[in-house]
Image: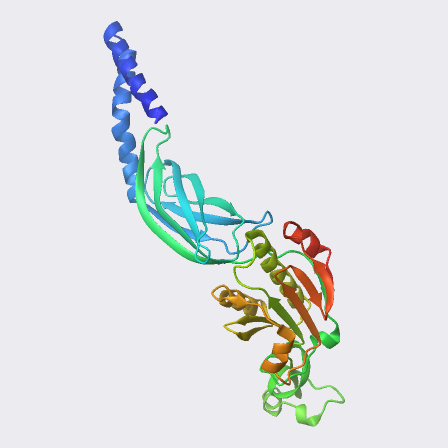
Length: 359
């Protein structure tokens, strides 16, 4: 607005000086100033007409703990857009918390740009990102035109994952089971699943020879069978939804994410167990896809507290486990009944990096 006032004042001054001094130079400046608005508005109108946008919001935070909101804008016109401005409104669909992210940038003719801004401290849960309009400015900042884009996207914001020290022994990692999942590297004796086919070596059993493939290749090939494995670690999540503050809740879910990822890095399959609707629920975590499915499932549930180990034995009889991890809403971490850490919400990253968890 201030630039526009200065511009109008300059037009008046140039026009006055052109008449007062009968100067061709001031007359040219005055005419240039008069014809500048329609030219600028035409270029802005053309740019707005051929502008297309798409909206994204990152699910994971960066190293600084911030989440990135991006608006990809494609300027398909022949005119330079000196500045683009937009606001992305973020809303947590669970808690109702709102925040806004401002985006800005410039786009050359026929250029595609990414306008990005960062939102910090987004708690875990389902968020809706919405951008209703984008504003195009000329190079002098005098004029602008707005375009309605009405973009929205729902994104599951995941907790941050920090470094920690998780160690799982062979007895914990290798759990023989009649389950449907097989170890991707270690062989076993399950005839229903083949791990790999290799050349025959002296000492191999004759019933392991793959006769069909051997006939095709004119050499003896042996089928190595897979080993079905189960989950020997149970991770109990003892907390009630909405009972913790924002900072404590963030620390709670970051610890869950960090420890579960640490177990996966140790190739240790595990169950995440929580109480919902008066009944225990569990999810087997064997890979990162399974962990992502857990986050999608827990984000829409209502967790409750309970006596987990007693309930687990009743709910899943005949399914023993080697190690039990308990993580409660007081931010106390237990492993097999022994207190491992009492986490402070403001120091979760530091305390997890110094944790040594043996399961």
